[in-house]
Length: 305
Length: 264
Image (spheres, each protein chain N blue to C red):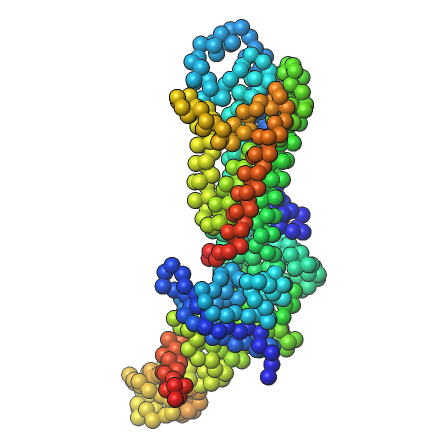
């Protein structure tokens, strides 16, 4: 079995207010792409900030790359690339100036490497940062996290603010890093963001890890809401019995339903008619979590036994 | 200039710093240039009519000699006030200001220890004040001849300027320490400004109250000018006291900084 890169045991973080972590057990293995999924406020950012020693745990154990973030923080962060959820930098400098400085803090990053990454993301390094759009600032954040080819990348909602084309480029970068043996730990509150790249997904809710699954398994359980339009009225009976379909409603030539799992059977049934319109919502995370919760509850008695 | 946190901090503030150094020097040189006007019988008589207490409250002790005039006007009020504002601004920004702005987090996610970061930031503050001191000293040297500041030597100007820089560092250290310990910018600003005002009152105003003369001994303003460095040269005891208080504050603030959470 591959080496464990991130390990937390019973990690607790209490703030003055309620939010925090309530005993998080996390295990991320070397070379994998791990998606850390949860609704806003679930504790994703808190976990990530504990991993890089911006926060100190109230209780429990953390180990990253075999090191204690508190004691060996400097040695540890040398081997880590970090992108904060809200990447903020002083706007009075150019992107090039910032990246060169950050590279120097890491003992120097070849300028050619910085330029190459910036080109890939179509980022102009010569402009002052305050003149950049939010998406372009986010690109700077991605570049600074990747530029020194760290063993471990810790990315908090990395694709927020990036347009779809750049999200794909980012996913290619993640794929390449993973192929090169780098480990990627990235958080998101949208399943589709991690679905493309992650192998395993951990779901956190209210400061606890609810479940860890292979991403395909999660996709199979994902709940979508579909809306189809036909060129003439259709009969509800044709669709009600299809696998995964529920909450079906037909109104003349339009059809709405809830779908769990692959849409194959529904698509084939619909193809008997002329489909003029097809809308599918993003898999709903809350429904997924609700499902994960039930899953978790089902497992619990077997643990106790 | 992009090599480390210390040089980067100075580099980022280069324009503002240059502006401060020139402005402070311009104020000092202007005041010094008034000496020939003050040194007239009519002016001396006018000043003599003011109650002693009022003059003391404004740090006006002796306006009959060039050294006394400089200590009262240039080094006594406006210049140290500007230096204090500059130092407090740097000290507040050093940790708490950047933490509240969210820009500190990126640095701390790099292989830079917290102690190192804090000390580099304070070192930048000290270097900025030293630069202001050098520019001010050069300005005063340049104006000494034309303004007929007879008897005030380069060494005495250097002594007063050194103590001025240490005075600034001491107040900057208050802002730095409170900010590093708490991460709260308004608190750092408030406490350090409060200390500056109290120190001023304890030096010039409170000692006029019967039985409060001792308060002067606790005031950084007194440690700065009380020994009259413009007349007597560098006051090693006062300078060391300012330095010691500064170092204790910096150490305490940095220590606390390594033991707390960084704000979002």
